[in-house]
Length: 259
Image (cartoon, rainbow, N blue to C red; front, top):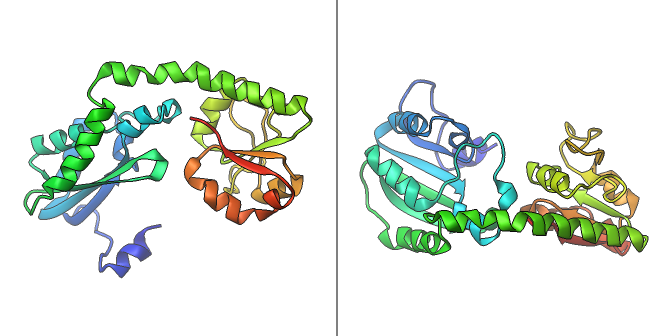
């Protein structure tokens, strides 16, 4: 999905087995590798001598700051913070050139490293100091994620029960892994949440795992005239509202489901 954008910048896809000028990874692949040292080593060895490794990841700091407990899920073996990633890369002979944090998912980091090159010390320090202040190297800070689980689950269920009691219909948007854990922990069924819309045709007509809540199309969501739509992926909220203006035109509301 990036190839056309990268081509506009003069980059071409590398050939399998040949060293690359640029390697891009992070939450896309390396986080799903059980042997992290081996996985990082493979990426470093795939670079040319002056190549650049670019890592993009949902930072652990954002999970702590936003109590994003349901960002921790099966299939992912690592949750990265910039200070730790920088140290791992240094052990493998790469120095971090720059780091930037942007608001996707509450806090996503883009980090670039190479064997040589000028270092943006101010940019790196700005990202790392904020993460250290959040407690990414402190076990007790991370353990506080557990404190938000029961509060969030009971709060969501209580809200949906109240909406049903008052005769309002509630749907969801985005059948994401985050929604699955949240709905199961909250003991939510189709009597409380009528359905969850998702743009992926492969998901439509199925249900959220562990529940009887159906996955429907965005078109079906708009046609249902919901009173309330819970968005389970905060970065999709504006996109959903602009794509489905019928919801608000009929008096419906969009709210972001709490992590």
